[in-house]
Length: 342
Image (cartoon, rainbow, N blue to C red; front, side, top):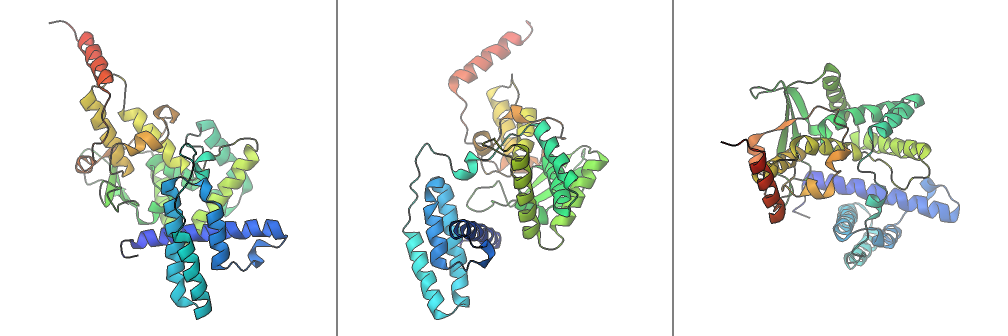
């Protein structure tokens, strides 16, 4: 697939491995075998993926399908002719599976994801992790602390660069290679976060997690802490229907930025500029994404320091949102009435 970046291919391979492990677990449960003893064939993997199609919305299904197809295509030249033929048949089957979820149905990942955990919940997770006294639990706590301050996607940490700011008025800066910079989904290849000041412990949290992300097999470390978080949240809240994930830290960070930049009393122009700033901090290509798909502004704890965006990167954000004309008129009247006479 020539249009895929190396990072996309890596993400697809990771997604395919996750699906393969899920297929093995399901087969193990049905047959009474151990999951790691099941020899999963391409046909069995595709059968499993197709059986889960109804759990995905259209866009999510296309990503899953592309991940499996891309990984199988990469594997085909490395195996014997018989297996290669099986892979070819499995790919053709999967290509024919068009997205067909119910329009009002959320994908399985969204149905169980708590996008706006409370500060109390996050504290309980950290305490439960530290009580386990394992390296994976310590890593999980370190990841959460660093991500709540920066809002990075889990996969963006290995290429992040943090240090003294080169911009006047700011002491610290974090440069991130945007994970979704293809096809106009980001506001550029990189985004930059600036802070006027940061507490020493926050600086250390960010530096520590970058070092861990760049040291050894980060994909395995990420999978390990994700599984650790899964176990902890189910132990803490077995009756809930939604639980925090690694991405929840990004959602909480973005909620804090929205609460800081998008405020009551702003005029239409100010509101649109604030939304563009939030989009730039997120690395989004348009000002619409964070408004629709991330936690509400009031979901944030407000305790993490709020970064500033690079003005040039803010200008790269596509202005998609159109404020409702009635809301604009109401705000204009309110602002006019609030002005002192004369």
